[in-house]
Length: 142
Image (cartoon, rainbow, N blue to C red):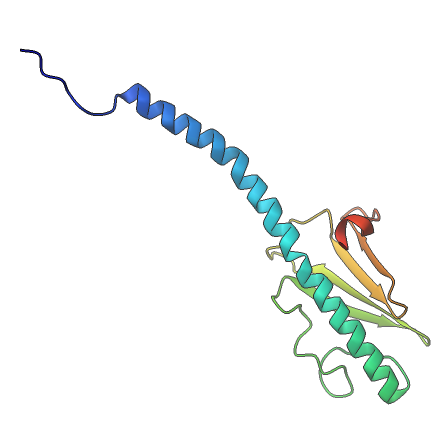
């Protein structure tokens, strides 16, 4: 009498492994790009808050400040964005300021070369450049 065996052959198992590998090789990089794009909002939010704080400081003191923390400053809790993906800095002139956000070295956004630097100034002009300095404002500030 013939007895039928149940189970999966090695060929069937290897076929499933190959299909899963192909799907993972497409899905993982796509997911990573999505995460990088989503975390860019941390820079935009931080810069808009920084610009608002600069305007408030200027109204109260008659000048913009170059100090983000401490006494005589904007009173911000840190020089990094809220979720810590970007470092913040501000440069002032007699009539204005330029706030800048750049990915923290070695951080989660350090690999984002498409939108490497975000800036906003006293007139609300927003800019973004890639790691080579090329303007990417329309792609990054959306």
